[in-house]
Length: 323
Figure 1 (spheres, rainbow, N blue to C red):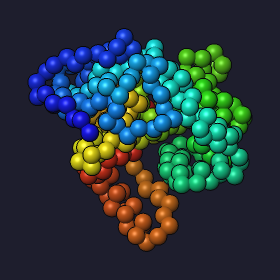
Figure 2 (tube, rainbow, N blue to C red):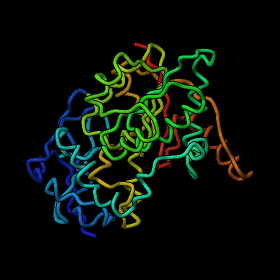
Figure 3 (cartoon, rainbow, N blue to C red):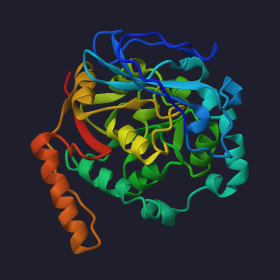
């Protein structure tokens, strides 16, 4: 693995090609004062043969740069892909993946929707926890899934009787959702297809780390929120970078698609700018063993006392829209 020299003063890294650009910090007030914490060649990341990023000019020698904002501490990839080219990353670059794994595009059945897909307990826990905050007697409860993927959370919420809508920029995944009878669209086309949708619950699962334009995205979520709406977000913390660096293998910190790494503090700061305030947490845990129960209780204690486990590489956060 080739880790390039990390700089400790402000610098402008070379943009790999015309598909990329530099951005100011999206969390604080457009600061451009950064510390370079990692520079690595794409070829030194964990390679998936089914992914091909040459459509946006990425080769094994392309250098990817990770920065920390000196003003607020936000960790993010910069330069990054321009918003107008993100569709290439999530469509053209993944063609081989869907050819190699055709089972990924098979429409889900009612059984795996109810199960939240095997191994995806998190989908069920997230839905149960967010339902705590809403009026269950409301027959028109609406869930909006931003980055809906194959529609697992939407399918589960539909079985609970919610009206469900979702958006994604991956055309293949949208086609799977449509084949399952789910109401989905590309974000740019959603309002034309489903006008005036306002949500009681919004999911942003395994998604915010991918977002290339955070201000535009959070504003979009704001516009889809009813007053008092509940927003569920989960993602990676910056700690995942340091842990994988020590292991000598970057997997979750894959700096082409995973480009935002939030601490609780930086995420709270960003969300508050758009009227999303931290909601008090409730404990909803699905456990299989006594050991798992202890683990869940410790995690819950950390969550409610200090806002999250500082040793974790992952977080969940719930906000309420109170403009």
